[in-house]
Image (cartoon, rainbow, N blue to C red; front, side, top):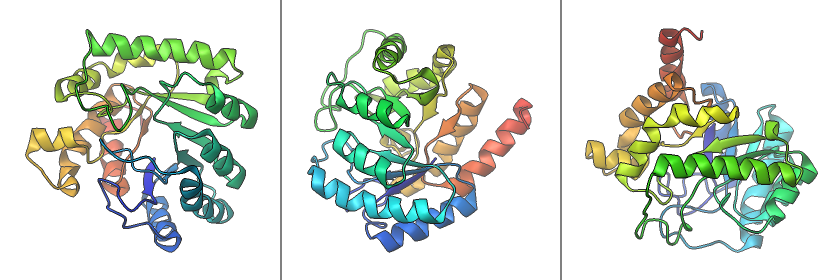
Length: 261
């Protein structure tokens, strides 16, 4: 899953693809590099990021999704917390909602997903992007995330979202310390018990910088590739990445060693 941020303040690419033209050019390159999915986001979710008004987020993502849907066959995901943005994106041609706020209590987003029969990524997050890194705490992070997945799948099914529409994301870096992130990475095989695809997003994240002393997000690729190869071994189905070409190469080798190719 190639990351396409149409934001001026993303932690990883800092507004490089904020215009529709730049975003479309980037998307084309990601597809040529081997991306199977494109994830379009109009709101930064880095720790402490300010919320974007609904109308502005729609203005950012809908034109890009419309043009992509008209030009490519690659499935398009919208990375949003807002049901109104999800609806607009699905109408524009997206087919998946990537929801970092699957910890929500209101069911409006899930009703939109059920209505459109869209794919849905249920990500675990403790708190919100504004609060998630203030003091994340768990008794057993792997157990709590695993229980969250089971509870969300049951609730989604009750609202008309079929299990086959859902992928599960442990939410690396979203309300987790370095120790929590490492514990979740070790627990990846556990999450496959739900018989749903597991999605992992570690690309350029700060915990990799802490481990490798890489302050610049672009310098964290070697650590991300190590995680990608281990994730393939552990049964992860989808990798959400900025560096598609390098990750595809790492995955191909990992699959060959595992015997999947």
